[in-house]
Length: 102
Length: 410
Image 1 (cartoon, rainbow over the protein chains, first blue to last red):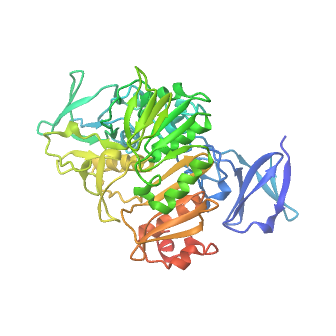
Image 2: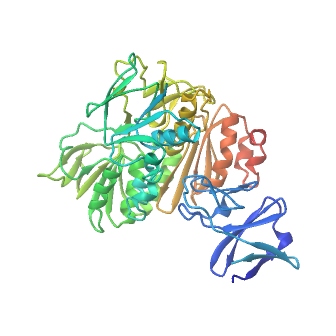
Image 3: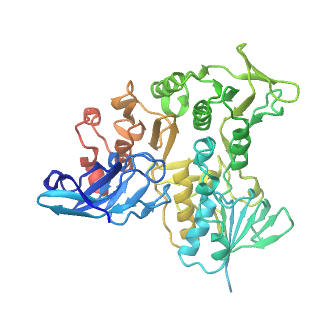
């Protein structure tokens, strides 16, 4: 049973922003899309670039290195060169803290 | 009556077009013909992660091997088209088969330019275009061996980086003063040169190979300026010529590739072209351009496929590509042949920047080293062909997405 880990204050990640956190040794990115938090692997499945160094456009994250696009809500590949989806993680806000399951 | 679409060239453009045709509901006969024995695959890894043995070939495949059979795509892999009869609408294959078509997509790509230099046919001299080429080079790689790379274009540079990363000693010969001078100019070319120098590559500029020498295998090269470099193998990367000869006698106009309009149509009814071979009219740059990169092949194949189905979709993607060398990620977007000002945002010294090629105040293109985010944000500025103040571009605190051109295209 995975546990939730507090990564930041819920108010610290503004709408349209994303940031990566170390959750028990895994770099997990969290994106705030319209007030909803979506957590996914920060490491691009193509060539391992950090996705938070790229751009977030609504629910799409764009890898800065080779332009792969993923849906942050599902991890699905929207545009190559990546072929494998991203792992995604549950999030919750508890007592003002943003928590990620991992 | 069932329609037949034929795609000649089973690379990224041809393979992508075949997949798109089925996705878009084309239920006629579909024949995909390619000279290589493998199903369509992506070429970027061949000079990088695949060459270094870090990723398997399967990862480069455009679709799983069974995809073509499962989708009713008749594959003719390892087969060459020797002629097209545009009047009869038939393609002729080298094994004697003739296939009648209603629409034909030419996605034959290119072949490596060869140089008429003595000794070029010695063993141990390679070009790089196919996975078979990459395999041959890979078999030569082991730490401590010595290679000469001829030509510092993108392929030459990426191969050089992969060889150095694999412990091979490398000397590179290029006729210009810096790598990529024709494409990126002196200032950015110098940054690239320094990256390679820092990784222990011997760089020989403003020189050309005079001869490859050796008994059966290449053992050394000599240059026109008198260098004599011992080596175990050679990789030649001097660019590509579009493979257009199959269209001889069809009436299709050839000029630096197959000339097509913005809908990727040739002047001959029913014949289209896409990918490296297509010299296409670009609605943003208002001229014909030919692009030899991944994104162009992928997206153009799909647009050509939809236009074969009568969609009338113009192709107006801004050309974009990447080149990974060592730990550095280079990206370029746009199209420029001449410029009057280079505006650098960031620092070339620490190798973290985007540089804009401007002419008359308009951004034609941008190149980034380790600046992918801003490079991608620049694409809409290039598309808008807008004038942006140089000071604005240089201001790192200024978010490029807020510029009018960017906003209006979102």
